[in-house]
Image (cartoon, rainbow, N blue to C red; front, side, top):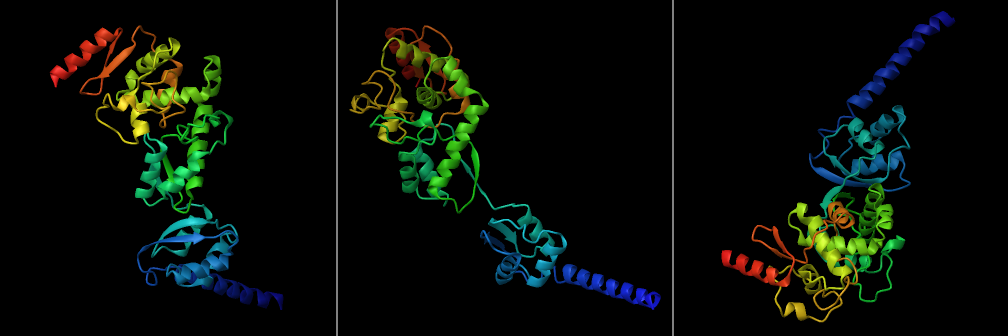
Amino acid sequence: MIKRLIPLLLAFTLMLGLGAYWLLYFTGNNTEFAQGRRYLVTIKPGMTTADIADLLHKKHLVKTPEAFRMEARLRGLAGKLEAGRYEIVGGMSNREIVDILSKGQTYNVKFTVPEGFNVVKIGRRLEAEGLGEARKFEEAARNYTPYPYMETDNPNVIFKAEGFIYPTTYKLDPDMSEKEILSLMVRTFNSEMNRENIPALAKEKKINLRDLVSIASMVELEAVHPEEQPRIAGVFLKRLHIFMPIQSDTTIQYLLGAQKEEVTIADTKISSPYNTYQNTGLPPGPIGSPGMSAIKAVLYPEVTDYLYFVAEKDGHHRFTKTYQEHLRAIEEIHRKD
């Protein structure tokens, strides 16, 4: 009796296998059903495989929800499809979609923060690229200090997060809030600082981390050519040491809120704590996001007798020791123009 049943059982198993094969590889092909477009699909936390299958079916991405569920189940991935926002192209097979969702290959948008960008510029770029509102990003940055070295009691600081946003390219989820974006950027800054051992180096050099970033932000914006960063840092540090105003145009441009090709004498007389022509010492805080090379330039400045520098037409600077030499350098550069 058992011997007679074995062929029947084998035949039944074979039929089940063929049926599963047909279901997966024929109804699992969504080419005819899909509309051939790119869709952004949000899988919310707590959604079951059945919920996801129904959602994909409604968006014309999965022809047969049952086939999608079987694909996930047979591969041991049912219940392992991750929440997030995904880009799925119409016509993908169930297998391809399950792969994307199970690996958490969420849809991200690339966003770059260039060296020297400040909070206002970053916010405007986020808004221009449809990733948030500039106003909300600024508000988030105003008092955001998740790390002790960011804290300050100076009431003149405009944005406490200024300078602590790491300049690099990020992959952002389009659903992230402005505060979440800021948090990611500041966390990246902190990670990079620790990876490069900057806190320990700053302690060794006896320089406060917030002051380090403030000086580096000016160095970043002054130096068109990176090789000049250590020399510019040396000039700023020398001026600070002898209680001479730093007189950096970059701080004037920051308080004006616009990049001017040439800062005027009238601009240098504006009453503001950020005006390093009128005040000795550092501005209330950083004025932009320095890159790692600018930060290291402040830690390892070029030691010279220079106290002045002026920009040439090509972005390089002419460095001088005395005010008279500085005036002559300015005159010679203007004559060339």
